[in-house]
Length: 321
Ligand SMILES: [Mg+2]
Image 1 (cartoon, rainbow, N blue to C red):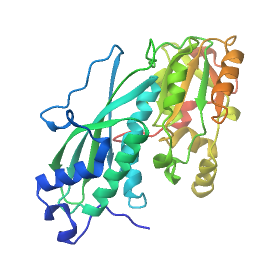
Image 2 (cartoon, rainbow, N blue to C red; image 1 turned 180 degrees about the horizontal axis):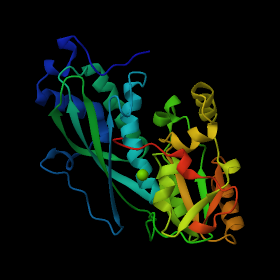
Image 3 (cartoon, rainbow, N blue to C red; image 1 turned 120 degrees about the horizontal axis):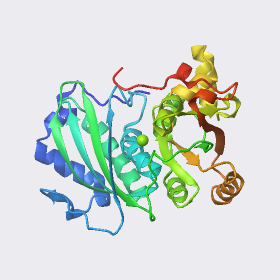
Image 4 (cartoon, rainbow, N blue to C red; image 1 turned 180 degrees about the vertical axis):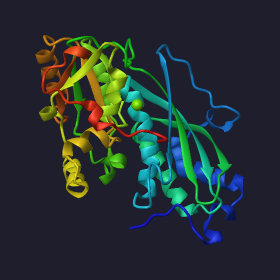
């Protein structure tokens, strides 16, 4: 089934409406996901009330041809735009608060498609308690659709968890299963907000990030100088989608799990080995349905155990390559 954002028929396109009419439509589509000004659309800026927590900001787009294609329904595209930003808030243990959305729209963008996009965005915003408080529309070139969301959030407890802080001997964990995301997970995933907030409250968690570009690449950002991840290839949780992709590509399922990207799972570094059993039991009690897998440890770069996975052989997705 095809859901192209574009139409050759002028009266079905955004050009048939003026900008003001389009903004009125967008506000209607967003409904109560978009509050009135000043905490919402309608003034020069949206006003976000102060809180005592640390403030978080992140931004990520969805661009046609890059983050979705015509096989993805417009509602799922709108939801994905918010969820990929939510995954970043989750990765620091935060909770989301408010978002602004900028669109770069081709004149031949289909109104019905755009409506689906905003309905999906609004559904997702309600579900995760995010207010859409502002935005902007710019005309883009023919055949271009890009939506850019900036998400504000705040810490849920005393701290936010960063990518820095891993030490020699620390354990590396990953939530869920990896690979084959293009088969649907890339827009159907649930951002790990509850998990991230819980992990930030655990003192044995030293560092965290979300897996967006593939484990093989993302893990580099968690690795301190002088150390290297010593991963057990047999422990990597490979998704059924990665196995299906492997049957088509002729590559190993492990290569898909490590390199495909858009997993939106959490990579977690946990202090030492001794903390592991209690940590794993606590996870099991709190999230019995969510898989958490110990995949390796951080070891000195020059003393990697024999048989440790060579990550360089499984380069992840690289932007602008
Ligand atoms: Mg991220």
